[in-house]
Length: 252
Length: 252
DNA sequence: ATTTACATGTAAGATATTAACACAGATGTT
DNA sequence: AACATCTGTGTTAATATCTTACATGTAAAT
Image (cartoon, rainbow over all chains, first blue to last red; front, side, top):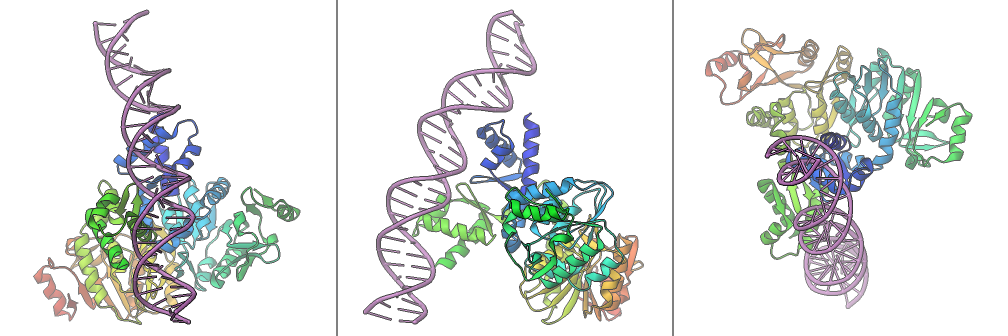
């Protein structure tokens, strides 16, 4: 049905920010590009999206454009990130309490999270705002000094927050991983925060798109054996996968 | 000169909303379309415009489109708020440390703040993101449970943050004011937070647009005599102004 | 004087968009 | 039932726009 499809497109665009016609085409393989074009035209006339060459973008996304440094990063590896985020989101159950970090993968996760009764802790400003859109979901922002490059907070002060909070699950995304150096990130205070989250949570899921493999960042916050589930994409090397499976870590 | 031309294009776009390449070409007959394209590309990368098929449009224009049917609240009294925010911003000096709340007036202030070496504490998510754009400015986000309606945090936990932080100045905006009930807001935890800020700061500036006068919200967080400076607009009633002046409060 | 970097121009080639027409199914009319 | 009409859709060709790659000129840097 046309109307449903148009709605879907609009939602998709709000989630993804920007889509090319070809991407849309893979989402809706049973209609022609021409039809999708006409849908976009309608959405544009309704003021809900903006058509750009190659596809369209959501109006919301445009407002975000002013967040340059962050926005640039957001555009990278989006497809993999979204798929990983979807996998992660599928693991979340109602009434649970979890921690999400502030990275771009976490941002994708925030968008994919269902609007159910869960409690989320995060140190990501953009993540918190995204989650605040959901009616049934409860968000707690971890305070601290704002890191401009990734719009996250981190500071020793955050430590005091953790003292009185409880969550079962931490879902973290790493900036870098090697088997020897484990999961690492660029900021010491952030690493500290993530370590705390890891200690606090009963279990820890790691989101890692394969582009991060082989990279090393200054501060390791978790080792291979620290995690319970690894969520990654299809490019993930088989031999590395073995390493995880050997330690009873679920890889998906 | 290239830079001037790019500026001109940006201004033109802000004025006209949208321009095609051909229109631009008639404005700048002495350069080729290719050059204009490259200019647009740069402007896009700077996040100032959006390139659409045939030309480009200003980001502002897009925001206007999205505001039309929907985000009325943010747009309310914007002009007054901006003027008030400008007054407040003019009072800020380099190397100072201040608290800003998370309301829409505070958001205007965040935009108007100069990019100088100051440290800002805030409980507003959007305010923190806005401030994170500034290179020289340091931001600390106060954590807590996120209030969805105004994208601010507030929670008893925030109390612990204040223990180890210091700021000279708190610039607050109230949702309501009457001489009898003082400055009030809708949430108890928020009122609590603001009270703490008020106690912590050496001085307190209140931003109050005149539309808030006569309104009463459930939780008072400051009384008339608690503040040092009142920043308001021209509509502010003269007899009320007297009340403030009587107590040696600067009204501007 | 030579190099380098940068802004610009030109034109071919790639890509995306529109326009025009055709077709099918749903709905309404006689 | 036969017919007209409308709407959504697909196909293709024609058109418009965009990018790429290379050439040129100019001014700053060495």
